[in-house]
Amino acid sequence: MEQKLYYQDAYMKSFTAELLKQEHDEDGRLYVVLSQTAFYPTGGGQPFDTGTLNAVKVVDVEETGGEIRHYIDAKLEESTEIEGEIDWERRFDHMQQHAGQHILSAAFEDLFGYKTVSFHLGKETLTIDLETESLSAHEAQAAEELANQIILENRPILTKWVNSEEVRRYKLRKELSVTEDIRLVIIPEFDYNGCGGTHPDSTGQVTSLKILGWERQKKMVRIEFVCGRRVLEQLGKKHTVLQELTALLNAPEQDMADAVKRMLEQRKELDKMIEESREQLLRYEAAELVDAGTGMIVSKVFQNRTIQELQKLARLLVSQAEDRVFLLAAENEDKLQFVFARGKQAEADLKRWNKEALAIIDGKGGGNDFLVQGGGRLIRGEQFLSQLLEKIR
Image 1 (cartoon, rainbow, N blue to C red):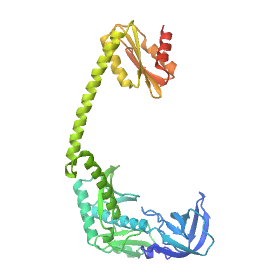
Image 2 (cartoon, rainbow, N blue to C red):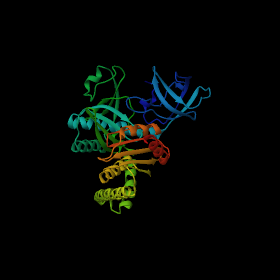
Image 3 (tube, one colour):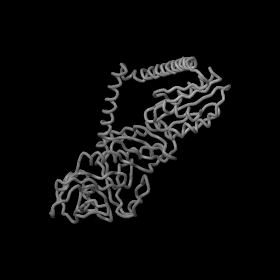
Image 4 (cartoon, helix red, strand yellow):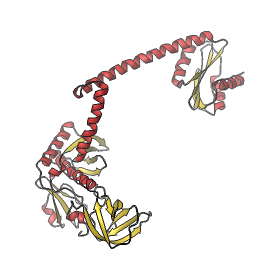
């Protein structure tokens, strides 16, 4: 433990150490082991520290087989003395988030008995999974308010090393995962928890905590939240979005929800009008095609028409001309699609014609005795219909 300087002083930003080992791991990654280190390795839900060793970047830190491996992006020159520099902004951010997690987890358990079963600290937000299948907005607000009250009171955050006998004196929030070298993180008269992470020395340095949302995960509820500097970052992002929306909607922030509702209602009405117009155009198109067609089989090639539009048009056609068969094809980007339909009084084996059509374009499709459809490789529509009609005749 004496080699883990981050336990002696979480605020240590630089240190010196001796180089004990410089090797590649089983995956070929280069790492070094030092006589002592202030770099925190990944563990307990908290990510690793980054920084430099003799100006060489540290890209990962892991504790493996009792040694702390500092993975670096270039080989260190052989030297007995190493100058280590911690990326302090990243370290302090992790300290704020981890302490905030302790506070919020304790708040949920203190108020409602909801235990935290897992914790993840991400790049932008962090999450805890609560041992409950539901969470109300009132409960979330109450826990957030209590957490911020504890932060505002600027209570000390203490760390203490105890053995298996001494730890029995404390009412811990969760069961310990170790039986030796037990490190407690304590917020007096609020939270007692076994933890190996780094934390500030007072709750006030967490500055603030904000719950962003929650969702059900299996039989638990996952809370997403931010602490410290991340609260300001989230506020800044949301404020920028609100300013942009204010200009786009021509409405102040407090009226923005009503403006969006009106816009959505208008969109629904517009979509309805567009759909009605499309239906009307299809009816006109069907009437023109019926009038222009001669003979029992009428064919037509379209550009960029959906299969749904072709189906609607085909049904309109056979309703107006029950003694005819209609062959509709559309050249759509990278494929050719078709719909064939026959009226009730027309004679045609559409299922056989469908097989012939699919063979021409190496396609797939299906249908019934009165309407079939399919699609396949893109060829000219006129060429497709010409080959099909030749086979039919």
